[in-house]
Image 1 (cartoon, helix red, strand yellow):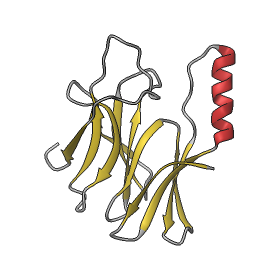
Image 2 (cartoon, rainbow, N blue to C red):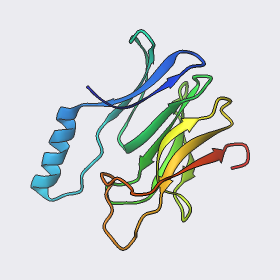
Image 3 (cartoon, rainbow, N blue to C red):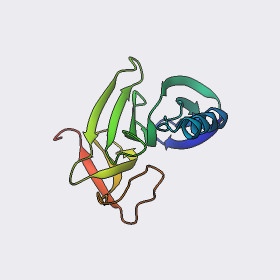
Amino acid sequence: MTILDFNYNPNNNKLIVVSYSEMDDTKKLEEANNNNTKLQPPKYRLDKYNTNGGKEQHIDTIEKFISGVSLAPDSNSVIISYDEDINSPISHVAEIDIKSNNMKTLLSSNSSYSKIRSVKFDEKKEGFYFLSSFIDEKKDYSVMEIPKESMLSYYDLRKN
């Protein structure tokens, strides 16, 4: 397994790790190229680990273009940022309840926020920080593109 992203939670000494199979990802890329179809996202695994490297819990398997992850201070939920499609500038932040595995969208890109990524819960789980960038709609977009300018923002969950 290859690690895409991880987040350490100092409140409980836990890690959330996003991993995927590089072999499966390469296979999807080859199929998309050979069949001239749209690239499908890898199957990302979200797992909770302790600081000794021991896996404590498999949280979910998600097929989305994930661009960030954060474990809540209480360890009851995880937020992820992801792009809707490889060629779409639309991105989202969703919260996954660890006990029920329910996913709830918290924020979607708009004229103020595009290419949302690198989410991080605040210390009290009252909101989260994230990076976003403006997208030039005149040129083709790809999730592989690195934005030239980014801004750090905060989303207050209590006030939406």
